[in-house]
Length: 259
Ligand SMILES: [Zn+2]
Image (cartoon, rainbow, N blue to C red; front, side):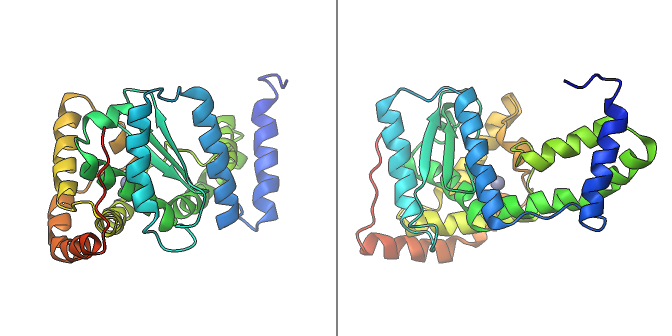
């Protein structure tokens, strides 16, 4: 173990070496690297958070997730997705690259029916199919270059330690951008409608989330910054989404997920 006295000199030297390898930037991640990080991150959350033992609830979440997964573009529809329900009051859910979906029981009190849960899961999966984690990671890697410079110049250890942490973890705590949120809303709406879930319930979901957030901050909004226009933007997409929804029902896609 390193003594604390050595750290300020050790970290900047290592960072200088890292930065030097890539010219002046940290190497950017590839899709397969982000997938592996998603796998590792999911295992970490699994190790830290108990899974729900409520078989009915687990089947309900899987029912909604499976209906949406079946409508994803390739290669996502045929990917082996892992769906887990975590026993936690957190009002949150996530999907990770590599094919992982996590739903905390806390958000099931806000998502009142299968269609609202489909809006949550559709939104999360859309972050994965639009490669937002990869973009977010690479954005962070680029913007932290200034921090590397400062760490190297001043011998400050902490900034360097943060950077090293980021380089080895996808970091669920990093927020998406507002434009990525808007994109996840629109793409997620399409996925839920194609699976036969009522797209109008997406608006009811976000209204419930905002109400809950006033009582107790929903963890969801720390990583998913909400736009003021979110609800208006969704309503503007209803004509297209309802056409997709009606076509799904006509084709026999009419999920009945029970809790
Ligand atoms: Zn989001």
